[in-house]
Image (cartoon, rainbow, N blue to C red; front, side, top):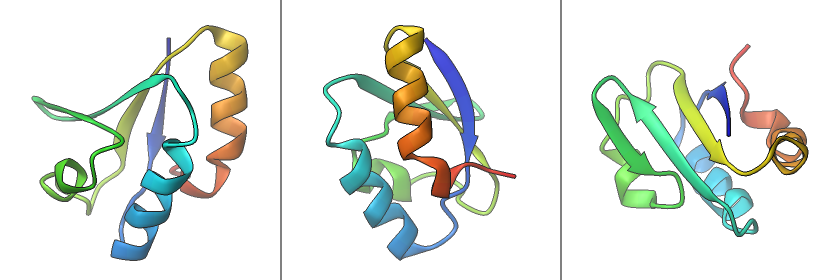
Length: 78
């Protein structure tokens, strides 16, 4: 399992993030404070505070997680 910070600060970015992450068969969680939601849930994401970076937890082995991180480069918080 790996964790990275993602920035989802617009409606279009959230929609494309869910579309991109849904291509993978792994489980993903978004963690914001005490809230943990399924990263493939559009409504769940909109329930979070999107003004700050959110922690993405990737439930896959390291090689698979690295592949996911590469494909999500546009969403990584800088």
